[in-house]
Amino acid sequence: MRAYQRLMHYAKFPTASAAASPTCPSTEHQLAFAKELQKELIELGLSDVTLDENGYLFATLPANIPDHPGPVIGFLAHMDVSEDAPAESVRPQLIEKYDGGDILLNAAENIVMTVEENPILQQYIGDDLVVTDGLTLLGADDKAGIAEIVTMAETLLQDDSIKHGKIMLGFTPDEEIGRGPDHFDVARFGADFAYTLDGADVEEVGSETFSAMSMNVTVTGVGIHPGEAKNKMINAQRVALEFDALLPEGDRPEHTEGREGFFHLHWMNGEVERAFMHYILRDYDFSLLERRAALARDAADYLNRKYGADTVKLEIEESYRNMYEVLLQHPHLLEIANDAIRAEGLTPRHGALRGGTDGSRLSYMGLPCPNLGTGSHNHHGRMEFASAQAMDCVVRILLRIAERYGQGIVE
Ligand SMILES: [Zn+2]
Image 1: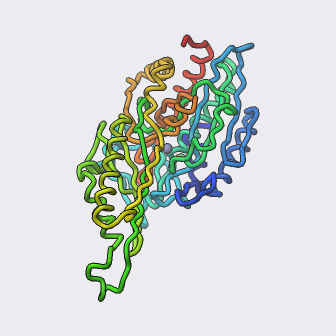
Image 2 (image 1 turned 90 degrees about the horizontal axis):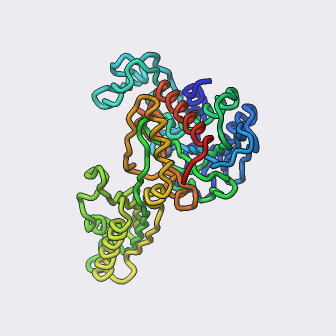
Image 3 (image 1 turned 45 degrees about the vertical axis):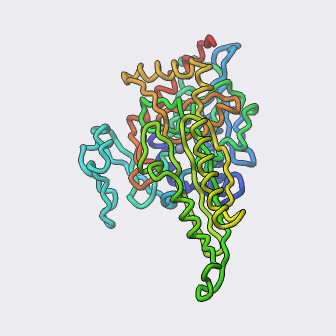
C-alpha cells in the first residue's frame, strides 16, 4: 500500500485533542484510532505492539542483521490533530495529476483552494494531491507522518534485502496541545535516537525549535452595580486588556518571522469580576524567553500597584526548549538525514521551526530527536493537503535512514 492511501484512511478518524481536557489522551477518540492502528501493525507483522493506558502505541521491527550491535533507531508521529479547525467527518479527496490551477474543494459550498493564496501548490504540479472537502482540516499533520512510518515498516517487512538494525515505531497522543511527551516512557521505547515525522517540506530537517513557555493570566476585579460603580468597580476585563496592551505590540505572531519571538494571546474569557487569558511565549534563545517572562511579570506588578495586590496573577510554565543543543552532541542524526534527502536529488534545508515538536522535549528527556518533513502543507486548516509522490519520497528517505543506521555509527 502507498503512504497516501493510508493517510486517506487515517484521516477519516476524528482524533482532535482538547486542551481543556485533563485526561491522557485528552480525547477518547484518539484511543479508538490507536486501537485501529494497533490492529494494523499486528497484521503487518510488527513485534511487541503495545498500547498503554495513556494512548502511547509502540511497536518493534526486529533487526534482520544477526547480532546487530545497535544503535536502535526510532520513528515517531502523533495521532491527534489540531482542535483549531473542524476535525470531524473529514472527507479526504484525491486530485490526480494536479494541473497547477485552482482546486475546487467543494462544489456545493463553492470552496476553492486558489493558487494565489496557496502558491506552495505550484511545487506539486503533476503530483496526486490529497485534499479536504473544504469544511475540515485534513489531519496530514500528523497522519501523513504515521502513514509514512507504517509504510516504511511494511516495506522492510516485505523486502529482506534492506538490512537494518532494530527499529522502534512510536505513535503518541496530544502533541497539538503540547503534552505528547508527558507520559512518553523513553526507557520502554528503548531507542537510542529517533526522528519525529511532523514537518512540511520533504527536504526540511527540523534541527531547531522554539523554546516555549505558556502563561495563564488571571485577573480578579471588583463587581458592583454600574449605577454605583464610581471609584469602586475594577472591571477585570479592562485590566486584562490593559495587561495585554503593556506587552510589546510588535511581538505578536502576526508581526514576526524568522528568528523573532512573540507573545501570542491564545484565548481569553471574562466578566467584570474575573478575566482569564492564556498566552504562549516563544523565542529560539532560552535567555530571550526568560526576558519575555520577566517583561510580563513587570506588567503584572505595575497593574497590582495600580489596582491592588493580587489583582493580576501570572502562572508561567516552561513547555519545551530548543533541541539544537542536544542534537549537536549527536551530529550523525542530522548528517544521515541530510544524506538520505540528498540521495533523492533534493537539497536538505535546516529550518528553525517556528513551533515545537515532541522532539524538542524528548531530546531533553534522553531521546535526541530531530524532525523530518511529511510532504504536506497548510496544517491546522481547511486548505491542508499532502502530495502522494512527496509522501513516497519520505518513505524512501526513512528506508535509507533505517539502512544507514544498520551499518552502525561512530559517535
Ligand atoms: Zn504535528
